[in-house]
Length: 403
Image (cartoon, rainbow, N blue to C red; front, side, top):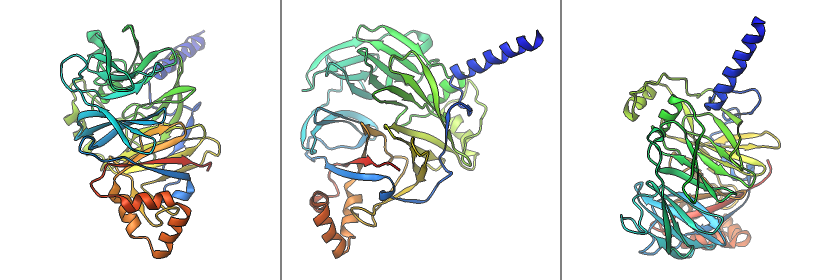
């Protein structure tokens, strides 16, 4: 009898830990030891099928700073950009990078936003901007349609979504900034709210200390979640009814230890605790395709790493420098905290790169390699030969091969 009671208590405890988003390794999920196959440099040919360049047209009206979100919809790229993480704007380009229009309506009037952190394109083809305590709807031409005020209970904090994704049921899944208890909110067009996923007090507090490039990710079959300072990637069913730990990211030998956190801790005190560590790694972005997933990683010094994991072969490749051995042979793209992939379209990785990186690679080509580029990849030659250093970023549309 005592053994039965003990078993029930232990079982309940385990379920409680999983519900609160505990990041401890679980034997039932796939483990990805990201540094088990680490190399400083990884050649393109190890994982790239093809790369298409999309140079974003530069005009006085569309100077792009830091790109946070890219959505490809109906032959157009919708891009959220900021300058120094401020003054967010939404730019629209065609599939070749030609500039079409922008949505830049910061203010307090009708159809204006205070400071939108993210946007999505809903099933009804509305552009939906997540503003402070509101959802703003625009048509695809940028005309304001309507706004929905979102009032949340004090126990959950103010509605201010860091990330927003549409669901199949014409609802929205949002990842909240400064969460008080739950990290996620499901909300419909009428404003009905459903808060869920409680990572525990420490987990919610840590999410106030760090903003990652991508915590939420959507595929045709489900959503994925990897919140700040968590080493587990969770899958969320398309109807948002079930959350399951799917991948454990093993950061050995750079795993962040379990550091005690106090209710009075803030960003400064937390960073001071981390400063005493020799080194550690944390997830900065995730992306999931049919056959692979990638993990953007940053360390204590904010150096970046890109890790690729094959769902089929279970092969892992992690590096901090990507070496072009296909197009601009010998050119190196160094992954950093700010230069890290965080957008996808289907199975393609969409990665924005400053023109000077491609320009240097092109200028360093030997005469033989340049002739090869002109013959095999004329579009690359045409684009790279005409770039200017102060141009807008170039989108790399990377098709990943089976590896």
